[in-house]
Length: 422
Image (cartoon, rainbow, N blue to C red; front, side, top):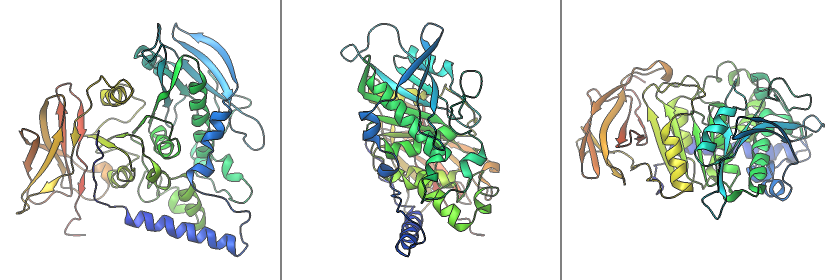
């Protein structure tokens, strides 16, 4: 898959992060915060150290024929050692890669847990799968040596940079648990360490966005729903970010918003969302998927349901294509281009599978993204080009939605217009 060449829409976000760096550097220079804390991804989480020292593992009960409980060393929390609980799924038989299997990290969302059926699903698909818990839970109850809970208090509380307290934050602990899980998988004799991917749902998608900028050893990542720029627009803006002090918000964004990490991502990423997602609105989403330096694909469907849903086939196909290489890829769709008269839009696409349906998805509403009404009109497929006439008046947001012969949806980047009344 080739990288879509997006026009830059994140200059303001980049400038904001630069200002934060100078702000914190100034504090350090004048002695208000010591010692210095490196805020880049590589310094926050030392990937190489995790792989040099894979976590110690304790095996638990079997869950069916393919899945087993596992406990592994987590990040120290409030000065005490911790364990992470997970389910490990293993396929039957012998792997495709010199007897070894590919592997996948499964990252649950808010209110979720380590899901045994998720690990089993991917094991049946030929992957060694690690479904981890990010709320300090065991199979049936909280662990006495688990990490932080996954509530909003743990995610958004204030923290300091100068005494290591940021390492007690839920995001820091969760990314460390995922990296340790990656190291665990890579060390298993039945796993090909060069064929490990990750996917996460909701808050797990948020973590997957950060992970993509941190973990260069991954082959691919698929965040479902989750994105960055949460302080600019998200379900948490009003009741969390707007109530923080500026200093608190700046610290949180600099260390724990995906917008501070995704620019370092070079692995292939599929971004999956819906037009009316209650938590991750399309304006923040659009800024997020434009950040990575690697290959980017997008699948935005109308009113996609939000939940711990493991059955979005575009997720499976995207990862299979990169890992196994004999699976046909999702179509590659270009940025939309307006005609000279401004009345229509066109995209080009490449696809090894026939594209059987094309639509222009659009909304003419303004205001809250979650409440906007979306419609579609048919677009015309002509060879490797899709075109559609724009509704009048010009919609406030629109994009092309293509569906291939397998029923898999893939999107162009969205176009957000500024309403005339704004």
